[in-house]
Image 1: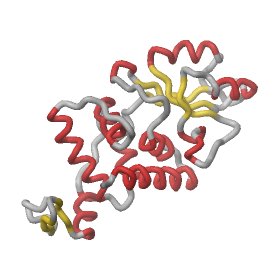
Image 2: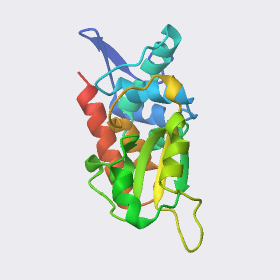
Image 3: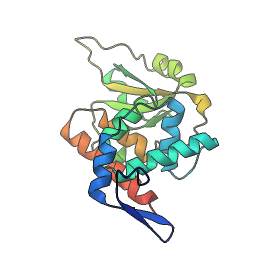
Length: 205
């Protein structure tokens, strides 16, 4: 962007310093395309405590995306667009009496409104990640069914590809932010924004 003359900047101590106003305008003007599932998790994982193995081309693209994310005034629109293919989102209905057991099942990882870091903890619903290899068994064991007018959705499952190589024991903060960003509520969006900004701040030297 600096070489193209679109933003102003100078190199100080091995880093580029740019005019915030120019950077924010340029980032917003760039098109936002959804990433593949693997690319989504590479981005998410880059701001967590561990790192997936990335190929050279992937590392180059990841560096560019992180730059856009760090310069964004509001990371939520980027997360909603980039990470919408991170997993297959499925809404189901569970007997409310089984919600507590569902949340404690070791095959899932609580996320979204069910994760403690969201600050929401909705008691009448559950949200979680589950691998594609375990999804069918979880649905069967808890008799999850498609929502109906008399049995509305109260479970959101994010089904991810086990072969991608994820091995974390809980959902990373950026994925949690993306889950909340998919909801329309003001509180959920505020929580998504806060979590994303914390993830960015914690990873910035």
